[in-house]
Image (cartoon, rainbow, N blue to C red; front, side, top):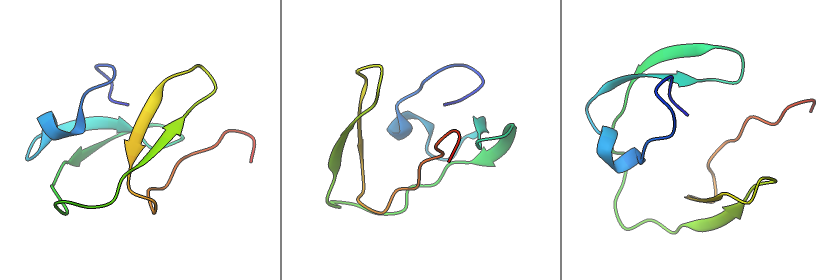
Length: 63
């Protein structure tokens, strides 16, 4: 999640963006870290679908 809303990660490679880190927005430069990696499908409470690597970290409120 960026301060400009949701963006496809592939469209941000090499750019500086403000992303939510679980507590506040912070400025980071997006870098591609791999190719042809296994992806898993994650469905969140509001029905949105995310695809990420099995080791991707998520911020979970109240935990």
